Image (cartoon, rainbow, N blue to C red; front, side, top):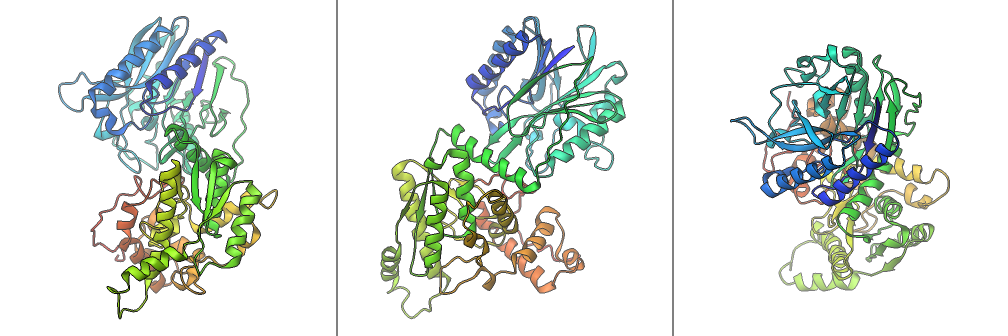
Length: 545
């Protein structure tokens, strides 16, 4: 059988676009001799649709789209992901389903069994799990159909009490198809192949796997669709971060396996570029502005944004105060020239003085402290948001994950923005990514990378005045955030007790800031936002045991 796998970029709720894209690939695959074409999980509506699923009109549009797609499935069959209504008397009203369509009609509907509720997933909120399992019978071929998480219950990582594949009559199947919506993190590609290989070997079946590409606000989908042989070896792997449709002959699958050689940092960079690009395209925006400080975080954000949007579509705004060093201004200008990207300079000293004068009476007799520093940051925020309003451009936030973790940022100041580009990139990774960008030629001026990080809100200020060295801080934060280790467990690894307790305390005390942060592009296994849900007023310190 000739099977086409379609790795495509969908838009949540854009039924016209999604349906057109699906029909176009059906007609193209049919013209090339394909007998079956496979699309990803919830391809009809996009993933994750979240509370759109609560609207009856949304479900009706899903059903209309499926019927429209069905008309084109003559001479070719299709497997398409979409919500479907539950016929059960009890439970949720919807299933996460795979529709098998042939001869212009929906032939069968297959429901997802394992509904993830961890990390960024909340499928049990909307969907009812499958209660029965059956194979597809097409052209005298038995095909097992599973949906994403249905394969993610493997030895060593049993999240569920059962596996749906154990309930199927797989001895009669010739191969398995898995349609997925598996978002990117820098370790997800290897995890996916491990899961697919384990299932292929266990069930002695080849697996045809189809994933999304594209970004849906925070979540970025990297594709990585593939064909896995029954012995667990990867037979073919799609390009990452690109749309692709490829046809396979199940009797003679060509050997074309080239594993991704990209480093962790390169994967993250490519994901962020796609994340920014799709956020703008799917929001009907084309231009961005950035507050460019002369520091490494805003420099990296600008480099990513210009690659995603085009160098002329990102306006950098330099906002010097009396504490801004001359080299910070010059470094920023050099960066803009290297990227051939526009910039403007808006000094903030007069505005800061006006604020301080307005507050002088009420603050009379009080020592200057972080309040006055934050006035500078918030003045910059006012200017940037004013330009965003006036010109209709999205302001990109430039805070990194280390700063987000410990609250090293000013609410309504440098935390302003419609999208947090590097909020899931630790400071040490920021340095690595800048060196990656400079791998062939100097784009980010060397001085930006080598000078000590500073917010430049007071004379001779350095980040190290308030925080541990980033090599140490990031290692502690990784153990606490990604690995969920307690303070004592981290100390037992050899970290200084005072530094660990201070770092964890900063993370806990600044949860309120993260609640008000812009959406953060997710590139790690544990991103702030939808992937890490903590009580805002929780008191537990995680320092015990």
